[in-house]
Amino acid sequence: MDLSHKMNEESSLKKGDHIYTYTNKLHTSSLHGIYVGNNEVIYYKSKSKSRSESEKCESCKYNPTKERGVVKSCLKCFHRGHGLYQFQYGVSKRHCMIWPSGTCYTGSCIEDGKVIIKNAEKMLKDSHKSRKATDNNKLYDDFDKNSMGFAVMCTTGNVTCIQEIAAMSKTKMSLKCFAVACQFAVTVFALQEGITNAAACKINEN
Image (cartoon, rainbow, N blue to C red; front, side, top):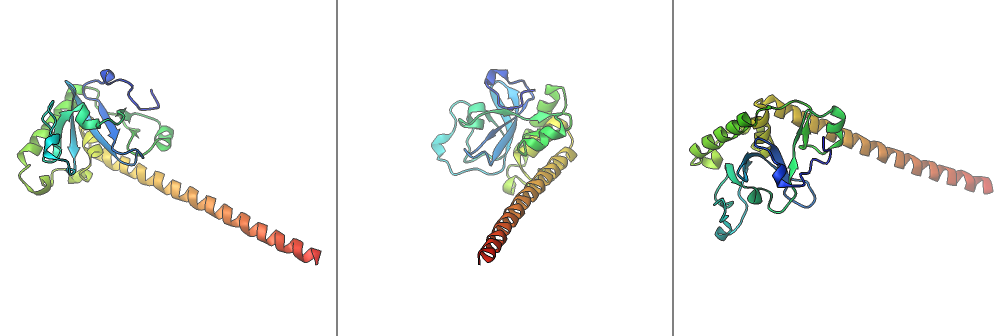
């Protein structure tokens, strides 16, 4: 398994792969999708960003200012120049705790890429049917309307997997907060010890 998760070449993509890309340089936000072949990705777009009408893709005709919900676009529109990564399934708990949230899962996924693509295409079709409703209606409240939840649902066929990943993320955040608190406590203790020792030395000198 490539622990970097990064895909060096787009040619290594397989149909049904759960892929993701970071949407900023700090890697604090990511966009997940299902690769369906022919240089196309199906993914969930929670909201459109303010881009001009002229930015409609000439290749796939995707328009980020108008389309939201489950959409299909070319890879270029999906990653927009950022790196492309593959979401990892069946990893160890240790791996899952080390790597950032939203990059891997300890559970298994559907092995047949055709089934994964079928799941994604069904959600795309359902999304198109309901696009006239406000904010693309309530289709994806089960996974809080995010792209990772959509991709995980397509890849596993199980909504509880999303809940498990969310729980793991909360656990990791709690551990990080605990570690920071411990480090802070150690620092404060060391400072107090230093002040106490300095005061004791001054008293002895007198």
